[in-house]
Amino acid sequence: MSQLILCTTKTAETPFTFLNTKVEIYTYEELCFYIYNNTVLISKSALSEKLFDWIRDELGMEDLADRLVGLMNKTAYAQDLLIEILSAGDYYSVDEIKSYTEAWQKYRKLDKLQKAKLKADGYLAYRRYIKAATFYDDMIQETDETTDPVFLGNIYHNRAVAAANNMDLDDAKSFFLKAYELNNNPDSLRSYFYIVAITGDTASLRTEIRHMGLEDEYLEEIMTEIGDSKDDVREMTIFAMLQRAAYNKMNKDMADYDKRMDIILSELKDDFREQAI
Image 1 (cartoon, one colour):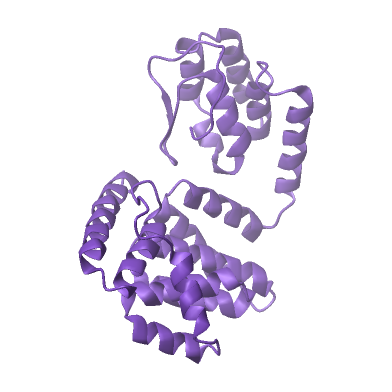
Image 2 (spheres, rainbow, N blue to C red):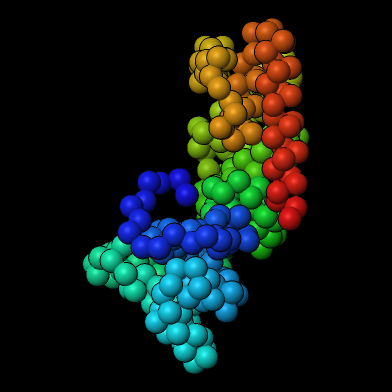
């Protein structure tokens, strides 16, 4: 879990793992936090006897486990099961659970594409790039001329982020450019130039910037935004690492560029192995 959580209940000896995100849960509080912030990623299939047994055996919350089994036998909605878990302790207040319920109701009123994007964005945030890419590709296939161009552009932008983090740089470049054409978001354009930088040289980057009708000063802005080449890259996303590597390449610091690319390729292999499970 990425946030400090005050835990007052029993800590499990064996964690419960949400398989689609590979997040491990050790306490009731962590379970509540995960549910509250990742509802769109929790399918009803994840709310199974395996989870209920873990709550009973590892957390010692027999009453909660029994109530969940009872609800499941009544074919309750996933929302009912999640609210039952959140309400079993004091981690979230009554008002917070009410807000959660209201947010769930709003989510249920979203159209199919909006729901799918929220789910894909969730996988992207957890660095499940292959799964996220699959969702984005399906969404793109389902769009038509009535789809809001900004919304579609944002789908393309996030699809490009997934591609970049999977080192599909040609796809990332075309997706970022398509995103900018649709959403006119400067972040999509800058990201496009980052990929141009890592796949080309300074001359090609300058040419591309001019082709887009921008002044040469924009090149210096891009180089500044790519950032300090001394920053540690090991805790960054692969896309952020690429930005740092681009800085080295544009400044002809090939030794540091090669070192960063070795780190990127090593982490990419590790990520791919984990995502393939």
